[in-house]
Length: 56
Image 1 (cartoon, rainbow, N blue to C red):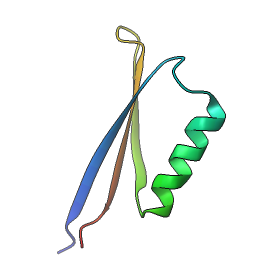
Image 2 (cartoon, one colour):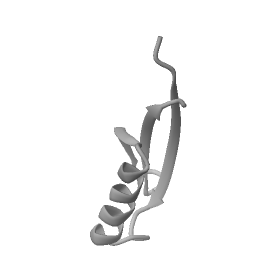
Image 3 (tube, rainbow, N blue to C red):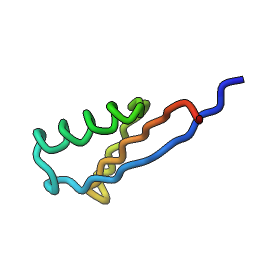
């Protein structure tokens, strides 16, 4: 049975430009992380990105 590890990255609205977010997402992809979900909170003005990758 495949086992997974997970990580969440919190980004406050206005903290990063789209280019910087793209660079960060590509870096995580290079490390084997796959983006599985994104949640935006209007109350906190924060976006949370959830990633998973096979556990080694």
